[in-house]
Image (tube, rainbow, N blue to C red; front, side):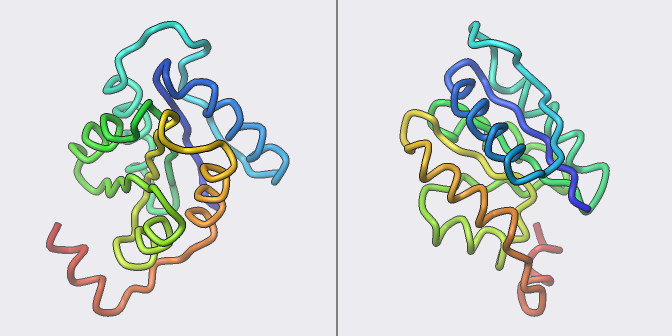
Length: 141
């Protein structure tokens, strides 16, 4: 069973709360690592929290939300064995799992609609890594 860890900064807080409602409706277990409101915070602090949890097991995945998705992506990818993918459409989301075995999705609350973000979450959580020729490339990262 996948463990899902989710976090945001202040800009992504509202979208994070919508994602949590979506995950609950789908009866998916998740852990919210903060923040608890939309007061200003530093996104790297929350990206690091999620990355540290995700890398403890191959089955763990993370969801990070900030204004653009970029800051969270950069911070999360500083961690060994983390492959965070900034997703901006369905194809990039699907390929991030199929070819890159992404274990964290990063989303931008200021550049995506809530509906699209929820679609991307669904694709991310339900797409499996293809392996094969992609496995050797993952090992090179």
